[in-house]
Length: 286
Ligand code: SAM
Image (cartoon, rainbow, N blue to C red):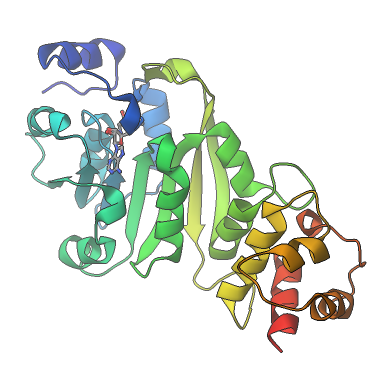
């Protein structure tokens, strides 16, 4: 079986199987070997590793991963891709194919069964319609995950890395930076995919931290504060927290806590750092 990372070989496979791209599954297949090399290198895949690939498509990146990893578990939702994958991955004895929705799979079980319980490396050219739930599951879930190297929309990659102040800064930035160290691997233009996506893309690596970036007594409360602040970006922090359905603090208590943290009464949530949200959560929890 020839390697797939070229437009010619990818088109041949698609035509051979009369494969129809499904927009609802976010199918944009990679056809650039330089990008594939960069992703696999950035993920630091070794023969010791079990890699979880989300959405293998026709198996282009899976082939690269299988060459470099100890084992690869590839989870693909589209049943029409399974017979194709069985052909394109036939030469690799270290690949396990699962026809399933990644949001319904027990990732801890994959780590136990195929990775001896050691942290998985997650690599994917993600389906863009479910990027955030996939990333949040991997970061918040109890399954052991070492690093996550993924292709996402450029704008989402920017949101993951940015700090307070800008319009990209939001709940995703804070969640990613609480659990992980983000690193931008490469920007990737639309012509590296078939079909071409309407937006620019980027590869980002999230190295999961051994412990969260800040200490906070009640992380769940901190994330409620964060969501409330960014749900109503134009409001002051005090109004955003006061109006949030998820929170039940009286207005005076919120004002006191904001003052106790050394913040101005009219401060906006989008200017707070992760550390400041943590201190505010601790103050409100008292
Ligand atoms: N890895 C391939 C590549 O780079 O050429 C394909 C990437 S394509 C952007 C996203 C893939 O994820 C598609 O194969 C799609 O069918 C699959 N997919 C979409 N939703 C999924 C889900 N919920 N669980 C597992 N796979 C999914």
